[in-house]
View (cartoon, rainbow, N blue to C red):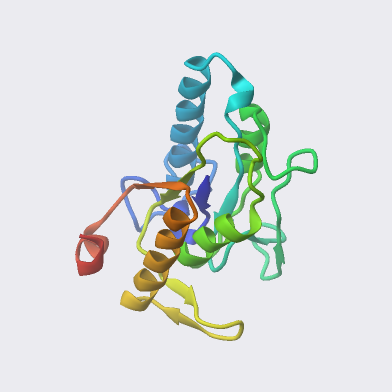
Length: 193
């Protein structure tokens, strides 16, 4: 799961100008998290072998797995989501606990989230197919061009993400995206239509 932790996930699902706490039932973050929880619950109820589904987490905002030290902090730390030392878990409750601990900050860097998923999450080590599910609420707004600079907004961010999406597919993984809460600003982006 490649999960959006950008600040827009704090927005109210009905009023983009209202930014409740991320744990408010009206926040995009909460609603997206609950949709994922329901998806996993349904998935696990309909399979015979729970261990056949392995979950890994990559969150993204300004960059992948980059979390503020606390909700109001300007200090950030690189975070690698591990489950008992592994990139993968078959326990949906353990996985959702990791989601519950996420915080939001500025930036929507699809490219870095997808790149991190293919370069830093270990192969699950079995013959089962690997699916990458990108969950986001907005168009990409950041793209790292080098270690010291990035593009903000516009088509360059989308093109960088498109290249990383192709890399996911070319690596033998299947890519799916859930794009929720699309608003007029997103609809005006010709590269998302």
